[in-house]
Image (cartoon, rainbow, N blue to C red; front, side, top):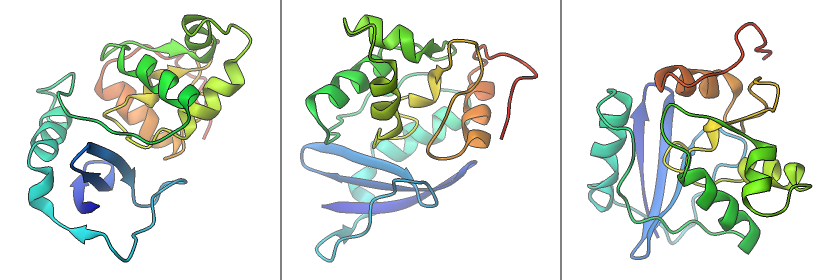
Length: 164
């Protein structure tokens, strides 16, 4: 496994991947950040396709990523993450919307849990999922980051309902 650290406007990201693709993009101070394993090798060049796209996204020049992704998770989690990839930049969906799209309308909480375990922040846009009433809901890397990302993308959220 290879990794590198990359500074973003929202803090340092740890990128982790192998020949299968990008496996993780974690804020190093996030809730579910991957711990460095003894056999991991620091290799910034391995992410030569990822870093320019992240920089272009943060510069407002890119709205969708073209990367080989290899997130690890349960079958249900991967189905949820696939749904996240279908949410266009500048748009949001509710947890209930995603559950219905998965054919499991009663699974809003399970969708929320899978969303919170998304291992590839920003690129798999879990920040685009909000509560049904238009409030932010949760974000494992902090609600301030979620609000920043949605503002950056000009995504609709309920104004005045943000609670930290």
